Image (cartoon, rainbow, N blue to C red; front, side, top):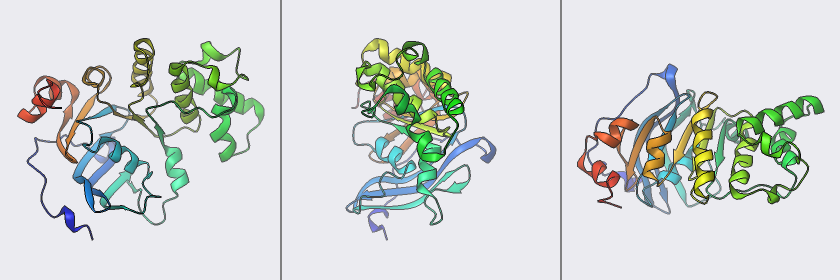
Length: 271
């Protein structure tokens, strides 16, 4: 039992909901605690399919914790307790029969710091494919070209696919990681501060990539950069102290928020 979650969250603004047929992820009264200390409290929200949803909020508010809960990255931490539900396309991701490996194929994740494997560009993108199934080389080559093209990297690396991925720039490495994730054809892509370690030009390329990818899959972005959230997301959720404060269309949240504390955060009067 998670007795530490007994108190109700603070008041919220009206929260945007989506019908099941338009919803990729559904989170219902989800709570999570580390060693008994609440990190997420009574979170309820739905993420629309083929849109970019941004999670914003101050450091420690639970944004990355929620992202990792969607991917079940907390499973190996014995100090973590959770309650409530998270559903992917109507299926409970924490149900006993859930195949976690398959879940992580369907819900890919990209972290703040690029993490290419110590192998060639080609083998980085092929890595997940080789784990899943044996494919004819021609089919595998086609998928790798498609993934690199989708990640806006093919033209930059097509003549050096068998060179080390570590020779790429930081921005190219991050796009390579995205290509590696896309190669296994996920339904959802989680992005945890994907451009925070990159230079401005690389950041713009990542943002353009995010906008382009929503025609193929659902994206959830964690960012501290208000301008970035405003530029690339369709919907924005503001979290504070592990609670959902406000959630709606990005234009509305940024230009006409319902709550004063949302406006305070967006305008820099609260950090």
